Image 1 (cartoon, rainbow, N blue to C red):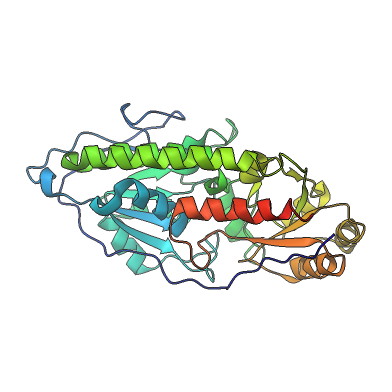
Image 2 (cartoon, rainbow, N blue to C red):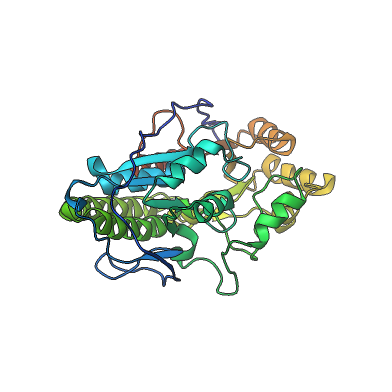
Length: 355
């Protein structure tokens, strides 16, 4: 077994674009969305639907999109191209989207946006709350709601249960899975990214009809990129199987696309989401899995390293088990969603040639 540790630099250059007010008036009404709608169908978004804007200046409009993270902001940018202005909240590796404290500037940016793109599922409730608090309420596109991945019994609303759990346990890392096995990190789901792109395409075309053809062409290219990456992901374990231990289930959906088996013990997953953290016994059992080469790769959230993950990293290195860092915002050198997903796939593909 060859040692391979793939760590990247800890900060990136902020990725954001200047904000421009939307001149078109947009009528708002609340509605729910069914999953996986085509751009031509009405209202493909998560939380708020909009009527056709009736602005005399629609031909000159360049809509503004506010995204809670640069990952989702990049999806909007790939769809809108030069005919959209994208502003993001969380755009540095030092920031945790779960624990991000929104500022007055975030509220100001949201108040000027035509669309607000949130992850949902309790991941970034602050974005939804701000969007619903401003006077000129933007359209909200909620990735979790349109993903089709959230259990039907779970409701992603203003009063989302996990939002209150985060408040009640300020000492805990807020990567809670409050709906059984549901994984809120849907930005690692290629299929969800495609649905979000469709929703953004539809709403941008409503806001700026003169740019409709441009948005449609960009969206088509994005879909082709995602289909290519989905096919590339399937090749990762075509020649060799791989098992993984994840300190956090950040890349769960992409692991499934790559055919990598996540064998993280259930007690570890459960305890890591509590305020008390992982017990000594569970931690020792987890380190033994690495020492005994029962797992092929250790996956670490590079943005939330704690004492538990540090001990697991040390155990993996001592046993020559590969360590792969994953991210919730863009690492150094990444400036698009397609590159973000492709680099992650490539990092695991390299391992199948060594593990």
